[in-house]
Length: 324
Image (cartoon, rainbow, N blue to C red; front, side, top):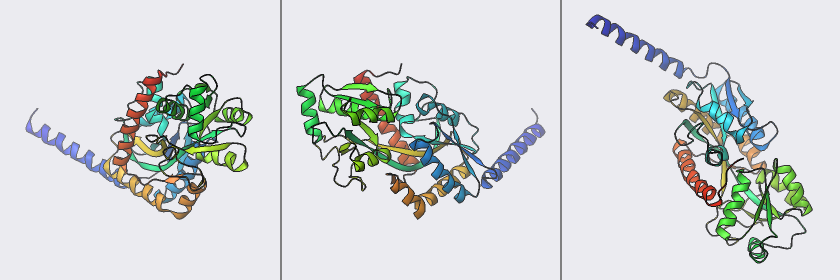
């Protein structure tokens, strides 16, 4: 290749880089698709739709939620990871999809620690340990003591094998050293019906859906899984306060994109996310739903993924959990 050809190639590459930079600086120029890995109407979907509205307002473009349910959210996350890195397809990721499901399903679709551009955290949520009103245990300690004394008597429900509330209970079981039988259901609702009726002993449920059952008296809350008490349930202790000194489970939703997003696009999304998190109306909507605003940046999100991936890997291996 002669010098003229080399110079021409260099000029073409420079022009392409300039054009790409200009497009990134103008981002967004058209609507953005926000992938959600769960069906419409559930807590992830409803939160994503509120978030999408505020994010679109900050970006000056519509942000359209697109549900791609299946494989515990992994179908949507895989599509996000493999999308063109231009910022027009993003993912509203729920923590179980990135820190639990790939381990339970032994998936090679994507590596949650490496295959995304992480924008930042949106909200945190805790689970609540719920038992039926007819169960005599008044606190977590009594529940554990009863389980140890009656090895076949205590059962817990979940939304399915590998679900967040399944693994929350497995962590309790592991730390307490108490026998407890897992009963998987097709979603949280049928499991809650059996908790209320006393068919199963307990379950963990996300705060946003657990709080109405507690306030109506249909179920009793023994503890929340967060480090601090939930303002909507001020009389309910944390798991640590209840005697499980190393127990903390806090789920989260986050904004992610495919790997290699241009710096200008990532920076614009980060600014918009911070603006959404600071919006009083958005903050109130999340608080009303039982969530806690989290302004963690990409580094904080990476740290959460790495730490929780290791935690759940240990729990899953110890309990020998694998999806059917």
